[in-house]
Amino acid sequence: MKLYVTPTSPYARLAMIARLDLGLEKTVELVWTKTRVSDDPVLSVNPSGRIPFLQFEDGTGFEDTDVIVEYLDRLAEPRRYARPEPATEPAPGLPPQLSDAGDDAYWRFRRLEASARSMLDGVSVWAREIKRLVEEQSPDIIAHEGRRADRLAHTFDDEIGFAPLALTVDGLNLVQMLLFCALDVHRRVPEMDWRDGCSGLSAWYDRMLELPAVGGSVPPDGV
Image (cartoon, rainbow, N blue to C red; front, side, top):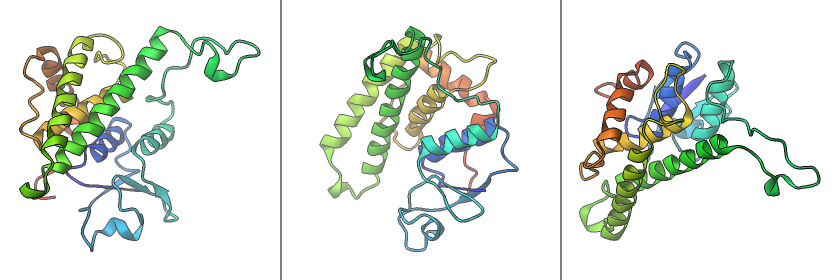
């Protein structure tokens, strides 16, 4: 299999972290590419041109990060990134969406997962906006995403140290990877000063960088 990535995509970074954390370096080959150019090699295998893209031997593949991470997770059984299972069964006679589907731990995981993904999506919009010509940039979009990132950083700063964000010997989970990749966008967006007033989150980010799968996913120079 081949995993098409770019050095600037936080979504590609998430897939690369999963690849290393699951020990799939020999199974999944990295292919460095550059998007939004006419000779982008990923266009020959993925018509949408989106990154990351996981290509199989038959030429088909997945482009959605969540799908890619789940597929890699299933390759490396037992699964590590599966969401916690609801603690209770749906009440008899009720449709699933109206039943008591889980305990507090389950819903806390899903809440933090959604918030981390929201932060990642928002800062990615911010990073793309500042790559445009100055006269084409939208100050409103930049300001909006900056405020969103600041609010979420302070929210997560209050959550650090508690499951599922706490770093343990049990390995990484999806919430941790989503949040790290969102915070890591500050390398491309200097104005994204999320460390200010978030000492717990800042220390957590630095500890994440020390993990082999995270530190080892830093794109090499020259790609």
